[in-house]
Figure 1 (cartoon, rainbow, N blue to C red):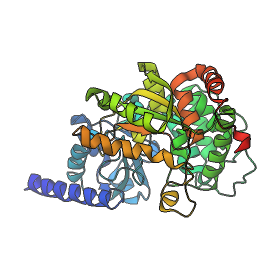
Figure 2 (figure 1 turned 60 degrees about the horizontal axis):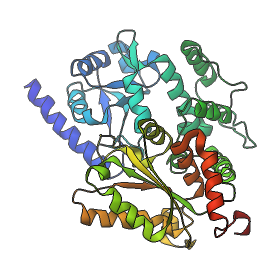
Figure 3 (figure 1 turned 45 degrees about the horizontal axis):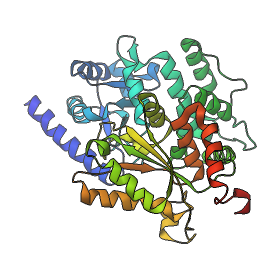
Length: 404
């Protein structure tokens, strides 16, 4: 009878999570007897980590009853059904904020993964035991993910000063500075001083653990800090472009190459744009691009398998088309200034007709700052040389930024 009840509860929970996901709502997760629950996850080889608040995880039935917070858990996306089955076997009142390495079953943030899948997968791959009770990130990655949480997911709400002209009058209900200091000491890392949101952001950039630029403008839970940081980074990337403008970078995924659609995609792009460079990405470039660009989260649509970029196509638009400020497209895609950015939608539709099974073979930048961020990810330290080469090619016919 107990097994039957657990199975029925599993089917009910799974249906609920799916329904909430369709309605863009988060999965509702509560468990009892946390230590036994974590032991069951281990027995089933489910990859997970408790992200924060390790000392607050209830140990006894008494602390479980008095627990008023929630546990932040990150779980491997492909194992969510089995995770749900385990939840069904441990009914209780301990609330879990559930996230995964993808956007499945209500573990996303309004159709955006809580962490870029590459970073989430790194956390799960480098984890350790906490008091032989449950898994948590390694000390180094715990520090990185904690700082990521403060700067990008919380922003002003973490209570730290911004390090810019933007004031922060928010306060936090716990000592964030002390928590960060303890994590840095455990990881053997030296943090910037004074400790500000901007300084942490720049530190995370050097560690290759910052939020991708094209995700920063789309992050759904935002405050004035996110807009200020986006403006700052946009200005810096625009300066790096020099006199270049109206560039787009398109990333062709590995699944397109497997189905021989890559050349057809390039031909479609050639109808609208002047192709400046086509790059077959080596393993190092692929990894860098996946870390530094959102890329539709680099997973199959509503899936869990990461599909890396294989080819980068850098293009110049000789005939940019303005997006009307009051149009539906402008409201849905506020980061787009050139209508030709939507060329990728037409290419995807054509590929779906020509290559059965095609879903999202192609990803592309939406504006010049995004293009510059992609160029840096593709070429690494060689990006200034590429910009200089393209300026030489385009300046006779290209449009100088100052005359726009």
